[in-house]
Length: 154
Image (cartoon, rainbow, N blue to C red; front, side, top):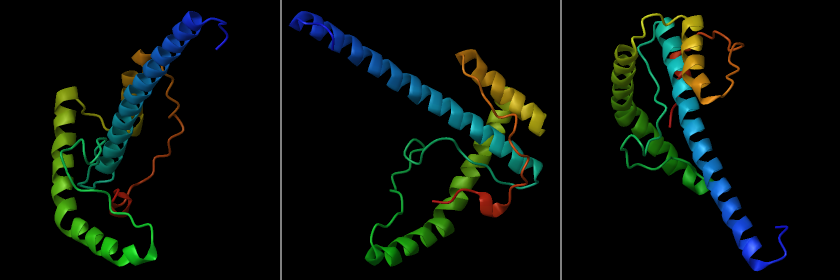
């Protein structure tokens, strides 16, 4: 704050508050778009690898699930958390995976995605993000062959 008087300082504080809110909104939108792009690239790689798997860019809560993350902070919590993770892998993940596959297939139909080659998908994601004025540096993304074990697990 460089203004000497209260009115000037209040005006500066208001401007800083507005700027901070604008940056927070920008970052939220940018991160959502970036997550969408990463999910698209990942789903195309999974399809190229012949795996019937897909990932979602949305959080568990955004997808309508009410369960909490399974983490432990003390050694005493480890056994119950590990048991809960096993239940999730057995009962929830197959259902969530089916939802992710449906969403990926709907995205491909909606956006007219036919070519899931690495180059075509990188170009598609780059074009999607470029109108926002951002530079996407993913040209060096390795074409790794994902495996079932690379599917994110909660």
